[in-house]
Image (cartoon, rainbow, N blue to C red; front, side, top):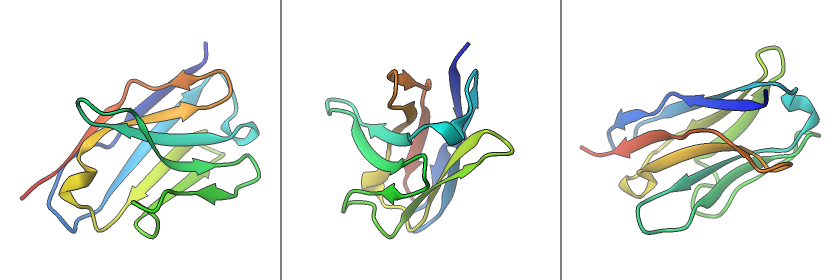
Length: 113
């Protein structure tokens, strides 16, 4: 069964850091492009990081230089390292395998003092 399970969300102060994890099962992440998206109420889901199977990554301007996507092949896990967090980063963060449209259940990130 193909499945993605996110973890690592929580409450963090502005300027703080957080690392999200996405553990995959049923397939090998190294063979696929993987992505992180986020969504706030009333808005469409937004892509925040994408890593190709060859390792090249892309980010929108809103997070470039602050967010880093990576893959640990031994753990079959995708990470999103987030630094210098801002209140506007508050959202539910979802892991996705674009091929086949596989989504995780999401993890809440709240940036607030």
